[in-house]
Image: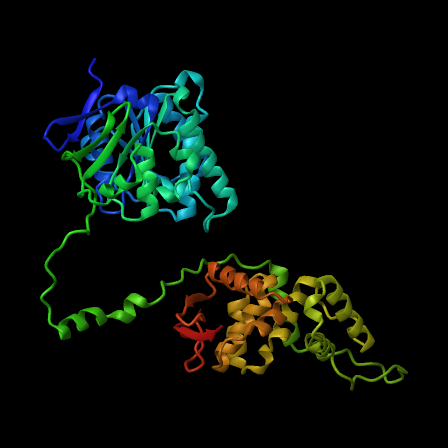
Length: 499
């Protein structure tokens, strides 16, 4: 059986081959700067060997998904699966000998690294009966096996380095032949690069990369200059699967191409400056507008709670007439509702109140009421928490219509976040900037700006506000249903500035 594939031609026009059976045992390292033809080389190798051996491509940029248009490759979208699903897919890839492209372009860099490491690790740990021969091509390998720690977490780096080291060092016995491609040899971990016995070195301009490439090719350092002079698509090859002496190879054509190519020149649009300016600014405010907020219809509150939510806003029932001969006190003093309101205001005015537990506050409230002569305010702790939130936010500063609107909007908001939400509502009605971090922190009972940011993000997920980031580092809050300049029953969005 002929196990060789033609990868290109040498300078004399003779075909250059790669022995795939030998490559499976000795692995391959490809190096070349951006634009040197590195991806084209990998594509040629994959196309020519597609009918010979199973192929697994780790593709961080989505460059190789077009292989599925011509060959039997299956594209796996890394962004569409959980960790458990990625590992299960990797095991099935080994079991069924499927050729796949793991497309990672939908993930950020750290997620790409973790997803690739989990996929390779699961293939490496496959049962012995599934140890079939397979090429594992890792493009942009300097991401997955960096020479030094970068901006990714140490846990992610350790996970990825372990997977790549297993692939290149111990993968051969499990049938896995690693092909790693990198733009910079200096950025690739040496213990990963050193395990390859075959090399295809493309054009590079940095001295440190040229010297390291020359060392791997067994060339003297003064000969390293020829690496800088290579044409696009030309590589210096060396290794038991390619040639025993360094050989310049020009890579042949491919049948598939990238999904997109923005590297070539194309005619510029012929629109005049005024027309182009109009195109750029047409309906800009519509495109930049925040998405509409879908506020779910909440279930009605329990009957006993809804009946008593406004207990402090109702007039007390008239007291029964006392007998003329009664020696008890008269009814000229403040009502129980007035006493309860005063107790709530006193608690709200105490800066330390919001840092106490709800149960302690409730006991303090009842004690103040009893001390003032109100022994039956008719409120449980949940009702107290809500009424305390209204007092803390200063909703009584608003007019009656605005207070009524605030009560409607807050009727189904959880009491844990009610106070800061009411502070935002009050500020919107007053036409002021949104409360600063300290004001929101006081309402929420925290001294952490980070908790306030997370609180606002949580309120946004509930559909109560919409947050828009500003270039200056500030944030705009859109509060659906409130604008101080219109009737409160109309529901436009009011923009409130915050930091």
